[in-house]
Image (cartoon, rainbow, N blue to C red; front, side):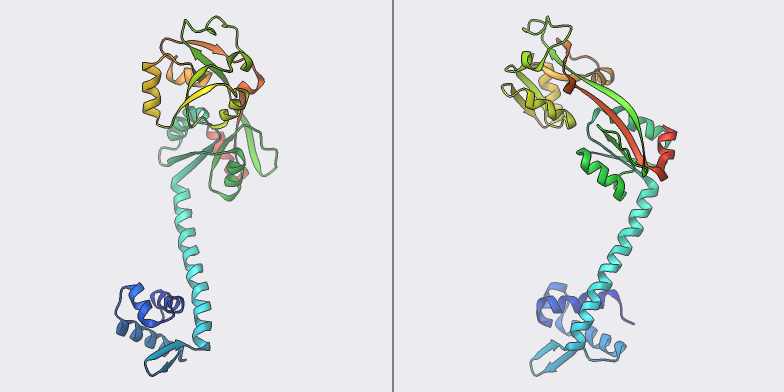
Length: 275
């Protein structure tokens, strides 16, 4: 009976051009590979190779067999991947979000409501999230727009407001009712690299010098050791507390407020109902 290993060997011979080279790639001896192909020919009842003195090459039967072998191997890989993905989907809840803050509350709640499942997360852009929800890559997505389609259940989840936190002696420290982007532009600030959808506000601050940090621990250390202004939101203050030695000032701009929506495929609406 022909097995998958023989199909892979046949395709490798076709790709390499010779049995000797294929044997090297497959890490088996050339005689062992030749015997395996002979057994395959016996099982099929047809010759796949033209054998000449010091030379063996695929004949027309063999070339057709290679084409079918490639298709069978591709189908088998798809079969394996599909079964694994289905099993994983039963044990996992995959969450994608356009920003980190909405997940601070969602993830603990999911873990509490579904203790038998593993929650995985990713932060990507809205269009990637929507495609991922449709394809099944994500069970739940959080976007900065509501999805208006009969295929989805999409509801408002949270509002997040962006603030600037400055030292008490900073020139903006007296603007307790709020500051504009124009008033902020030109100062120096600490910035964490992964700010999700909030990167949209950077275009309003073309003259601001950002000291960008990609490591969260380093960023937190710099917050503690320096007095540079940083961004914070109502949600980050709620979950992590106010930043030391700084005044929290709201940014009085429309772009400084995000409304987040949580969406699932209609067949998975029970996920939202449980939340």
